[in-house]
Length: 234
Ligand code: OAD
Image (cartoon, rainbow, N blue to C red; front, side):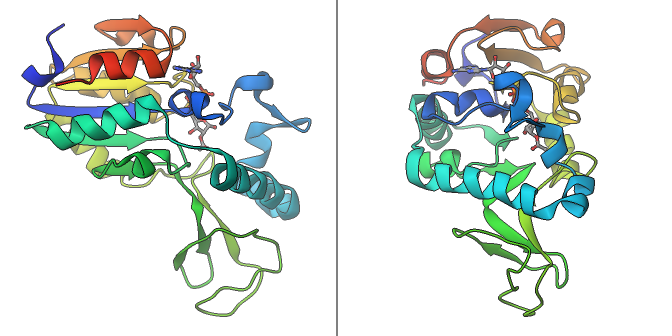
């Protein structure tokens, strides 16, 4: 595998593993359970219809933890610095709903699964920066209707944000790097094969081999804060 600066068009995908050393739990820690609920059971439109208060509580807790406790780590910082100095085309796609990439300074960034610090009114379709709690009574700052606000998170069964743009960029890149993701959730889990279909080199940096590990040209196991600064330096 060549040095990263020799590539001309790089797409990076990140998952919960890159934020683990910032103190944010990955999805499949604790066997994927949260207070006895399967994570999938608080991350679907059906769960929100059935039990909106529980779903709000799950995301309110995560939003507060993100705001009060989490800071970007050396892996987020290394990606931001690399983007600033790299001469070629670059795109960072994250599955994470935290804002640690942008706090570290990343600019060309797509939050394909949405953002914890944003709320969406499904009545008037506006989105808002959101720091407080959301409840079933929260009114929309724009249309004033109550009961329509939800976290701006892409749930299971919903279509990720900017997927057409991501797919175009994957077909154009000459290097795809996947960091800190288990490869359980599609479409992100299929990006490696997409990038490879037009001849891109593919690199995985993860604590353990992911489910799609065999599709990567090179797969390296270790902590994101060790591996990302090591690979993403110019
Ligand atoms: P997972 O929790 O499935 O996987 C996290 C991966 O990070 C695992 O393979 C860990 O081995 C690895 N890991 C843990 N600590 C690490 C560290 N310090 N350095 C490097 N790697 C580490 O999280 P995701 O793959 O991101 O979707 O999950 C994908 C999606 O599933 C999420 O975006 C979310 C979830 O349900 C939605 O919310 C729609």
